[in-house]
Length: 166
Image (spheres, rainbow, N blue to C red):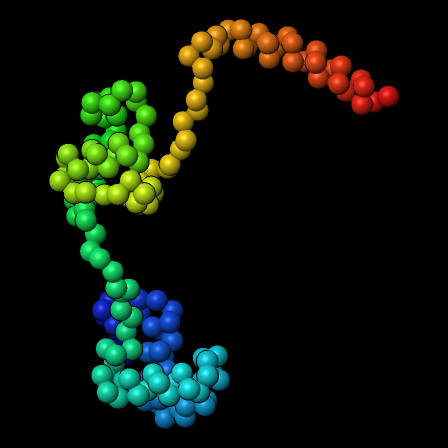
């Protein structure tokens, strides 16, 4: 008995329900099916009832209900390229993306409004990571910081280790 791609179960639960129906069609009893599949006899009974009323399609998985995506698949594939241009290319000061900025760009480019709280989920879906920028003082002198790390810090940690070693 060959199966087409449409007949293939979408997930393991659907596969288990369809297997229960196959076993029933082969003459197995409900309790034996339940034992073989590791479920209760009541579950098998419900599945077989659904199959009697709605056929094999009644045992198939249904996607969870919820609102449709606001951005189309084409827009989602375009979004990384739009954001890759950088925040400054879209008129922001500083080249750092925030959820509020991304929401504004999506509204401008695609005409779709997203709440900034949902942008982090969208960003993960397109393969980007949410990162918090490092905030440093504008007066910071990198050469002095490097010198402190190379000269002062080793001396301080050496003094501390000598006190601990006493």
